Amino acid sequence: MPIIEAQNLSKIYSVAVKEPGIKGTITHFFRRTYREIKAVQDVSFEIAPGEVVGFLGPNGAGKTTTLKMLTGLIHPSSGQVRVAGNVPFRRQEPFLHKITLVMGQKQQLLWDLPALDSLKINAAVYNISDKEFRQRVGELTEMLSLEGKLTQPMRKLSLGERMKAELLASLLHRPQVLFLDEPTLGLDVNAQVAVRDFLRDYNQRYQATVLLTSHYMADITALCERVLLIHQGKLMYDGSLNGLLEEFAPYREIYLELAKPLSKDQLMSYGDVKGVDGRAVHFLVQREHLTRTVSRILADLEVIDLTVTEPPVEEVIRQVFSQESGVRSQESGVRSQESGVRSQENNQATND
Image 1: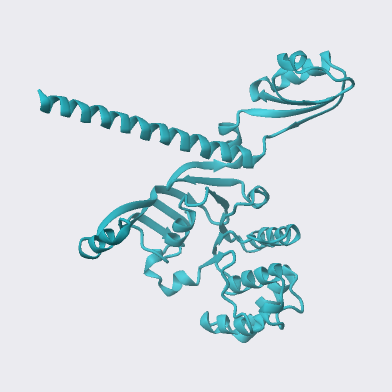
Image 2: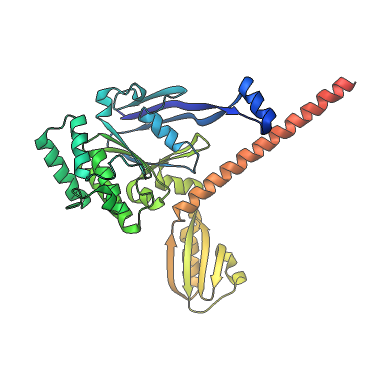
């Protein structure tokens, strides 16, 4: 049974529209007009217990809005959602004990107090006994490498240490479902790796379910086998990370080092030549032609080194969103043209 279920989940905001100037202000005061913003539109997916799923999309795509609906912070405009057998927006106590939401750069621990003092408050909120509190804090402190840090005021900790302390506070009640919104935002490379290692260890140790949003693709590739892609409020893809590459990037990259330099014209028969720099050559080759192409290259050319790689995930996802935006812009243009044609026809009919 899935632990997270979303069916046709939508969130629409009504936003007041005001024209500039005094006239616009007066009109806005007496006769306010609104426009609808569709933040999330008919999003459906299921996540099984213990899965770690990446939730990807550009800024404003609807990721955080979806997370807020899944955690019950906002009420959906339509659709149904259940998390750990509960309806999130009812905010019932059993539900709150089963989930946690961590948002990068949003702190819950008090700035001037040691983290340990704030953790004791969390323990009281969740009715955690003193014995269990010491055991959990000790375990999480070791997993996060925070020994000796929890007794220092939060303002004296580094950004990475503060993020780890925030994670500890969010996981103190040992939730079944983790909603993580940019947990490594702003951290240096070492701190990012430490947070990823911790999340992987925590998932394996407690079989916790994780829904993770991040603009750092290293987070996604390190932790997630499955990804959800959302763009302009609509779910575009739900499947494996490898399946994403196969569907939206049907090619592989070949990097060659040749014994002697060749021109681009001499190499074009082997594939799409993306770059030639002396003896270094970069090809794009269709997946179904890869084995045959590599065999031809090795047979025909003096090769010192050959590397075959997948295209960077960041580039694939960027292309996916760019293509989707282009398609929607074209559709919008077509609709505008059709509207203009209809308007001209109506005007002609009126004149006739």
